[in-house]
Length: 190
Length: 177
Image 1 (spheres, each protein chain N blue to C red):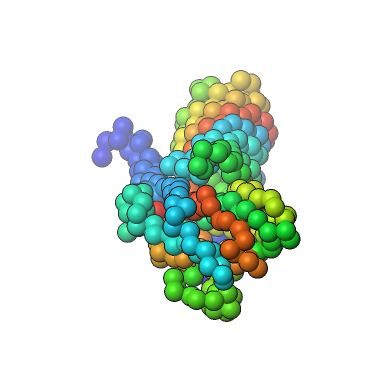
Image 2: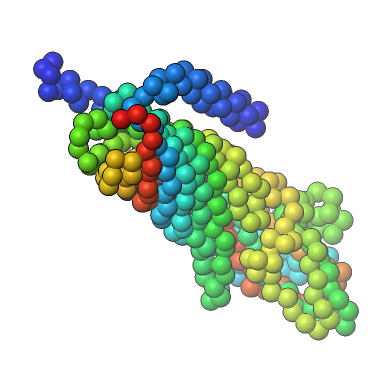
């Protein structure tokens, strides 16, 4: 548990250092955006839960033509799971994960193309809640890919697939694929 | 390195991190359902008792060497009260299958369910939802279950005036692939 607290503090300090380091260049960067997204949360090899939903908000600041930083806040839910117990169906509630973190996105953001492809990797802090068992706050990793279509100069439509891994107290982890669609609003100098 | 290849060099860090993250995908969560044979539930003047040996389960055998964590443990059962007064009870779990009296159980085993109540001449089915209302000492229960072999003791005032049956233990484990 002490190791977990030290890791969380290190994570928060790391996020702050990254933001302070890049803040001057973010302020003078070409564009930044805010966005909302939602979709499906698909657990990978997890027999005790089923598909659920995911919603979130994020910002993006381009620090280089091909590199952006995205702070994000995500709420994912697992679906309930039915279990056959001696011929009776019993339902176990799935639970949910509330997460905030920072993703780095690398892709084809420069140029005049209306379609942008990118990959992402990130770190996040996750709060796991499930009825009947103690809550946990754990670190997680994320990686994935996305496609963004610039519908207008200031508005884009985006779809992405993000794998979200959350470590568990005592060992192991839960892996989920988040398939989402979203909208981003751009502001800042062109 | 020519310009064309240098253009894609920025993908290298992404590839490295992706491979690193992929290492965390090699884990999963499985649900093991252990049905206790009614003939294996013993009643004495002190308590009900049954033992659980997860080694009998193929999923446990396949994953026990890669076991990371016991995520969840659920007990479901039916308790019939044939007496003319309300039957109240508790469930304890222990690694010791040879406890002899209710006092031994209460002093050495781990209390996991408290507040069971069955009206006179009635029965109670403790399902998943009701189980979580009664659950105590979840962390200690998880540690006991991790051994794979444990014994459950049901303490009620007059066990021989009731029947414990249809007991099922559902264990959710997290293990590497």
